Length: 322
Image 1: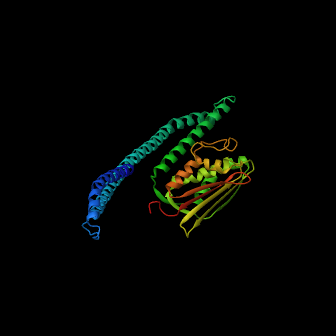
Image 2 (image 1 turned 30 degrees about the vertical axis):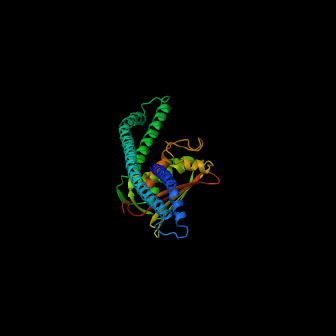
Image 3 (image 1 turned 90 degrees about the vertical axis):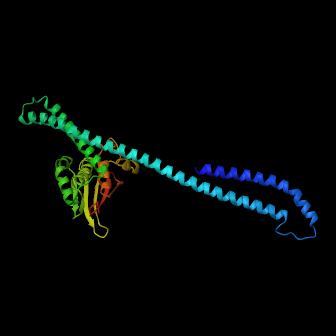
């Protein structure tokens, strides 16, 4: 629109200059005759030269006025049309993302029932000792695969809910959530022989408790599973009353990562290096990011020089709706 207005302005200017040039040629004889007849008389406002100047000035003023009005109208039209088109495009994108989140949640929910039945069908005969010894390894592998599938579905549900922004805020504490998550991975900690050091000061937050529990659990699981045998895990929580935020800091030993790989771990289904990610769905840290952002929080990760990484999570201590 603005380009069209500029072209229109240039064409108007050229056409008026041509008219002025032609009119000027017709006025030259009159001007010469007037100058010859009144050579000894000073020029007055009524001379042909002054008439020609007044004519040119009036035409140019009119041209500028009309062109200015045209540009203003074109600008207003362009802004209006651009806003309408942008609004429609954004609306279509929002509907598409909403439909995708609803589909993910519904599909994940529907998959839970057959997986629960599959787990029961595997656990019952194993618990009752009715499985021959030569078949037990295969059933244990199937049970482990079922567990990973259930973890993937839980992560998909948490990711869809976190990205939807639908929250039910309640008061909770990051320190208590960390203690619960450490209890859940106690067997893994013992198996790997990890040394866990924690400093769990009160860290109150107000948000969706199940989602925050998922956030904390994913970070703790990530620090434990993607570690070295006999490695270390350091976890701390604290509350910065002055800024109204609670913080969670988790660091672990592990494979050496660069900055690009560490940042890429927050992309869904990215697991880092094959050696650093033997298990998992690749959704753990992407869920952490989605939940943190849904609570107006931040999450940052940086690689440690001697291997592993350190994750910082900052969350407001007041309701996300405040």
